[in-house]
Amino acid sequence: MKQCLPPVEVLTEAAGNGYGGQAESMANAMGDLMACAGLVAGGAAIAIVIAFLYVWFLRGFASCLVWTAITLTITGCALIGWALLQKAAELEATGASPDQAKAAKYMSYAIFGLTAIFTLVIIFLRKRIQIAVEVVKEAARAISDVKGTVFFPLITLSLGILYFVFWIWGAATIFSVEIPKTFPISPAVSQDIQRIYLLQKSENYQSVVDIITIPADTPPFDEYIEYSFDKSLQRPFAVFFFHLLWNIQFLIYFTFGVVSGAVADWYFTGRDTNGNKLRGSGEGELGRSPVLASCIRLMRYHLGTIMFGSFIIATIQFIRACVKYIEKTSKMKNNRLQKAIFCAIQCCLKILECCLDKLSKNAFIWNAIYGDAFCHSAVSSFKLLWRNLARVAAINMVAGYLLMIGKVVVAVFTAGIIGMILVTTEPYKTEVASPVFPVLVTLLLAYMIGSIFMVVYDTTIDTIFLCFLVDEENNKGGEMLASKSLQKVIGKYADASAKEAEKQKAPPGGGTTKA
Image (cartoon, rainbow, N blue to C red; front, side, top):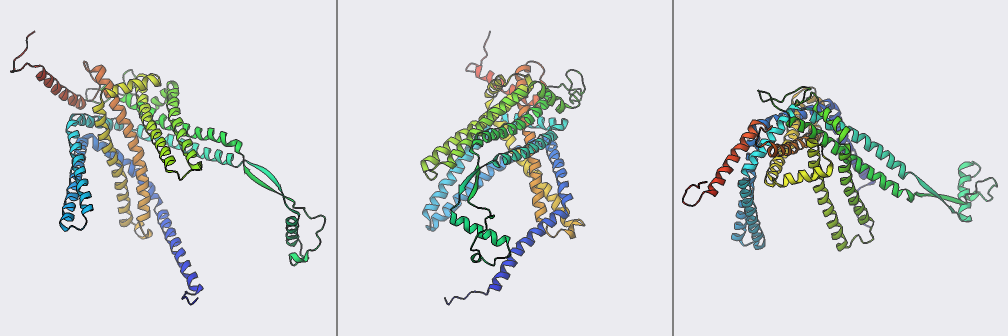
């Protein structure tokens, strides 16, 4: 063909070097990880310590952190809009890309508009944001006082892993059940198989051609067996799959219920003269093990509430899985209209799942406070939050900022500490060829720990917030159980609102009304 090709030996050597290089790199990375496995495991403890330090930091500097994050967000958006506007002006001056210039200009206008709207919303919610910051500080105090709330999810996580292993075994058992079906083999093919069989079993034959007569005691090989999945087990597997969804959701909600119950106990416990929560076994005192007490109380009185709430979410998840299965097995996979319909159904189901999940969690918090049934708790908590919708928006925004920052801080700071130790401390300095892979593993591990910690913190914030609303509505005329700093913020804004209301009632001209 008159083509210049490298010799086969060269290609073989190059391929071997390529595969060998990849295998060697992977082996070196795993070797580095094994050399510092203890240090990486110690990174988990470092991540937990950093998470607690972050919560302690929020007790004093949450307000500064929130307003700094809001300011940076507004500034960053404004800078992005300005950069796009400058780029549009530059493109218009050159005249090279008028379409790109127009797109950049309109995009900058959109960003400026959204930034202005966001700024106005912040100005409107500034009082609620300050209350939300105090709620976050209160949640930080709760975690510091009830540290068991952080470690309890590790127990349910372990149970969840064990259950998932059992479920995988059960699913494998279901799919391993097969139905045998027998099919005949034609005589000609059967004889060929017999000859091959004799050639392998006997040394008297050199090839298949040598076998002219087939002995009578040779197996007939006149049929073969084909195994297929027992379709009658599809329905049991569907039930088994729903079992997985329900149990996993039950463990999630059980953890939420225990943590929220312990935090609610903490909130509604009185304080001593120093401002600390009263601890002891008496009435109105916080027990020595509030997490254990909350767990026992939930298992004794409210287990049905958790099961019912998890059943609702699991049902929606199961319906979503069925819709996805129907979509995948449909004969019209490339139909755009069908894709749009399935996408819309999945979107609606996901929105419904998110709404009911939030409603269920608020119901569990209300249940932890009052002990009401699920439906009554869901309706009551929804009404209370609806009456404080602006505060809900503020607490969600503030909590979102702080939780996101917390995850990043825990992960990056932990990975940075481990990286410094690897490159500056013996024996890791000489034994570890490259710290990249161990640092990446540490980063992932620390992020997982930070995420678990922040989920607990988010649960605590939601519980404190709902407890605060209940406390405000029931004890506003008397003695609230909120911290003095939170009561001070509420009182300050309440006084401002009262003064504003008096101004609105005053007649024109600045006169006063008489009774």
